[in-house]
Amino acid sequence: DAGITQSPRHKVTETGTPVTLRCHQTENHRYMYWYRQDPGHGLRLIHYSYGVKDTDKGEVSDGYSVSRSKTEDFLLTLESATSSQTSVYFCAISLRDGAYEQYFGPGTRLTVT
Amino acid sequence: GQQLNQSPQSMFIQEGEDVSMNCTSSSIFNTWLWYKQDPGEGPVLLIALYKAGELTSNGRLTAQFGITRKDSFLNISASIPSDVGIYFCAGQLNSGYSTLTFGKGTMLLVSP
Image 1 (cartoon, rainbow over the protein chains, first blue to last red):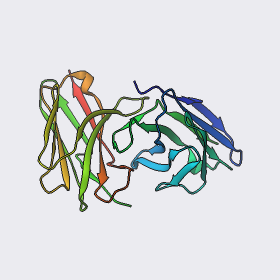
Image 2 (image 1 turned 60 degrees about the vertical axis):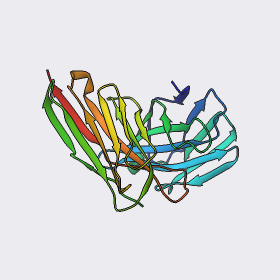
Image 3 (image 1 turned 180 degrees about the vertical axis):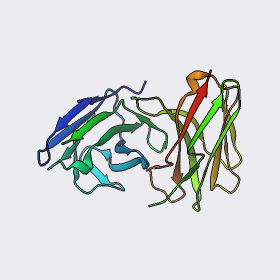
């Protein structure tokens, strides 16, 4: 158990509304990641962070922003949700610098109507 | 982005059978990882591989890092119903980045 929690676990929202998903870790791990998972696409990286205020884009970053103001929290924001952002969102962490193994949270199922 | 080709897409087998699945790429990978995902949960790391030719086991699971560094294989022996799930491979490119590339998964169904 890597001590990762995600909130909310389920959310339904309307097109055009802002949405923020939270990933929280109980250890001081430096690297945190946001993925989305869709049928036929597997897991795709949205953004990742390598420290407080240090973030970078992944493969599918358009329409998403992130913030990391403290080590334990990594927030994913959809500024104006669209139906194409209906997905399951996973947060992941690496347990130590230089390690490529990632450990995943339980996921957030987001539906945009 | 880089692509990992994972096959087969799905498998339906009888309990007790052995299972093989693989991931291939045109790119060289530094690290290979295998995950299993149960319905409604996040992926769980099964095996991590770090060197070409490496063979690593975790119970009934055995994974190998291909000698060309462009592929990896996962075998499950004597399958049981709780092996049901989606298995993902993931690789870290030999280019210094800390991010992973994931295959699209193999769905395994096991009939009792």
